[in-house]
Amino acid sequence: MARVSTYLNFDGNAEEAFAFYATTFGTELQGPMMRFGDVPEAPGQPPLAPDERSKVMHAELPILGGHVLMATDVLMSMGQTLRIGNNSTLNLEPDSRAEADELYRALSEGGADSEPMRAMPWGAYWGCTLDRFGVRWMINVMD
Image (cartoon, rainbow, N blue to C red; front, side):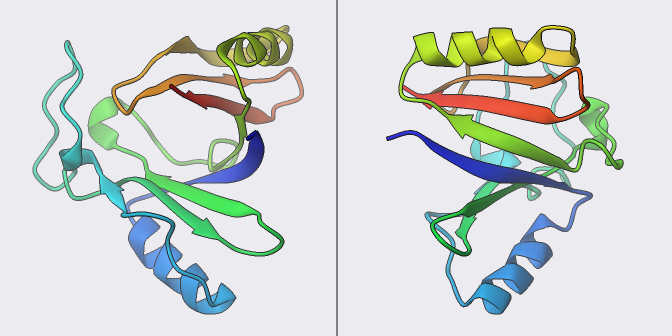
């Protein structure tokens, strides 16, 4: 079933932020908090620094009305920096790869800063783009 959620990027304090949000909203994480060290390193990627292996790769927390907040920590070793403009992303989870490709095509037209749709190590077909209005969109289809 398709859904939309909000993906938040943090500067190393995603776990602390989500503990706060869980208390604030009176909810619990959906599934375990995934850490960068939990996932095999991608071919061609430099190895993660030991302190980055414990950073949050993915977390999900329901808040109000079925809406879900998701989170990750940015990694300096991967050239990532947190700034206004990349600290939040709308995450779309369509029902099919075809729908994902169409959404990606439309949203990336005239945009910038795109990561093309491709298979990812966590089992998703994934891509991300900044549209021409400066809004970041992530598209995720679980295979």
